[in-house]
Amino acid sequence: MKICVTGGAGFIGSVMVNYLVKNYPEDYIVNLDKLTYAGNLENCKEVENEPNYKFVKGDIADREFIFKLFEEEKFDVIINFAAETHVDRSVEFPDEFVRTNVIGTTTLLDACKQYGIRRYHQVSTDEVYGDLPLDRPDLFFTETTPIHASSPYSAAKASADLFVMAYHRTFNIPVTISRCSNNYGQNQFPEKLIPLMISRATAGEALPVYGDGANVRDWLHVEDHCKAIDLIVRYGRVGEVYNIGGHNERTNLQVVKTILEAVGADESLIKYVKDRPGHDRRYAIDPTKIETELGWKPTYNFDTGIRQTIKWYLDNEDWWKRIISGEYQNYFKEMYKDRV
Ligand code: NAD
Ligand code: TYD
Image (cartoon, rainbow, N blue to C red; front, top):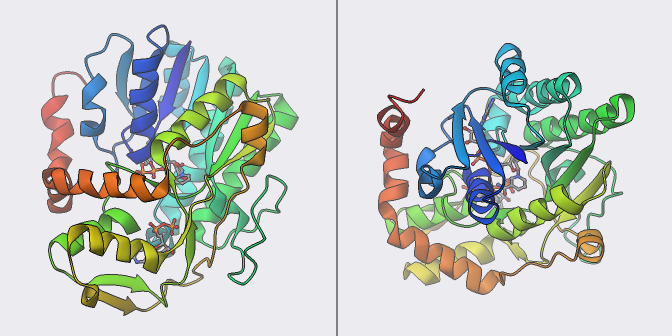
């Protein structure tokens, strides 16, 4: 199969690309990424010379470019990770979220309609369900929980999901959607909670905890997320949504304290700052459907997975220091100056 992974230079997309290239030598993987600030080809270094891998730089919302690419490549499968992903940025600059997350998705769907596709998979998020109250630990997001987005980011992701389902119903495009909880692991851009706090704690800088730090996120290791997507793409039922999560609910304060302890820094670094506007209180996934239908189970336990992840950031300071300094922006130009 020829599989196009969009956003394959980002945090999760790059794990998917590496996984597919290594585990399916009979498949051909095209990594399509615009290389925004969040895209980093270093994340795909391990596979960049493999015969079943190719990188293409481009924008999923650029209609002319996407149609030409689809015409040339004749993809069997699209896995759409490409998105603007940071909630705080969406509060400041919603336009780019509409452009990439909504128009980018409809552009890909139109190309699938025009050139045909065996499967279009939309990588969505549990944030489309809004949030759950802290005092009802018995409640979880299921696939039938109504969409109720809170932030411009989640509103754009929710809109994309609605278009994906509409194109299935109206044009018979064979689609699936996955909605996963918060991911952690190596190579995450240091604007997100876990890598941000690790980088600041090691530098002895204040850790900005929003509000009271009691907000709950349900953490899943990025490799478990990608294995779940692979199962859905190959064995999931067309037209279905699958939630992905491993029952690892932690308050932000618990996560921050785990990081402080692991890097040997003091809790006095914690600084409570002004809350994020519209800040979702709790996310919690019910993964029963994917577990029972597709036999998926997470392989990582959060307590050991988070420690391995913290160790990775400590062992790879160069990686995030280059990102913070902006130097990695030159990586693409250097590595691919003769190829694109
Ligand atoms: P990320 O921000 O690390 O990476 C996004 C990637 O998309 C980058 O490589 C970027 O260059 C690329 N991109 C952005 N705009 C593009 C465009 N217009 N055309 C082509 N490429 C473009 O994001 P991530 O954390 O890896 O998330 C990937 C997907 O998974 C997103 O769709 C996100 O909504 C979803 N998701 C993320 C999480 C999480 O915890 N990070 C959880 C559930 C779902
Ligand atoms: P984030 O990693 O941005 O993911 P999301 O908002 O998509 O869940 O944030 C995770 C949680 O951490 C969220 O409740 C906001 C909180 N947070 C802070 O308290 N301080 C920070 O500096 C950041 C980036 C996030």
